[in-house]
Length: 133
Image 1 (cartoon, rainbow, N blue to C red):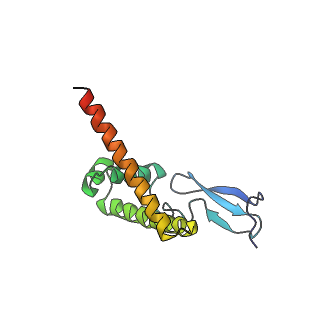
Image 2: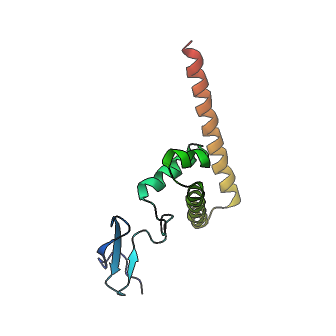
Image 3: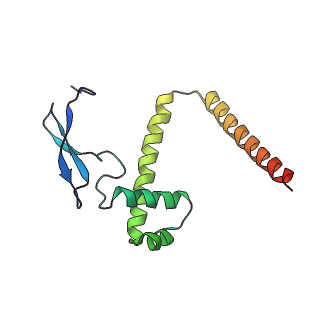
């Protein structure tokens, strides 16, 4: 039996290298677990700030080696964080898309809306750029 939002989760303590991560406790089943459990951050030995910086660099198109040099961490660590974040995003998005229960026609309409909006944005940017000259 699952009891959600009943005040059954409490902070039991802190853990980690700098004791900056919460250790949670379930009053119903008596088990302890990490606050990052079932997230892309679980089990990584980096600060959350460093992980966010790695993902931000990847999203901006910065290469793995460059990110490694900029943040002064091993390139294999950068690869591992990016891979784990990507896998986590894939799982979350596939579950979200599965729960939408859309028909094929609805997906086509959604894609057409996105493409049309993108084209309109590009057209407005082109018009505003040519009007400034």
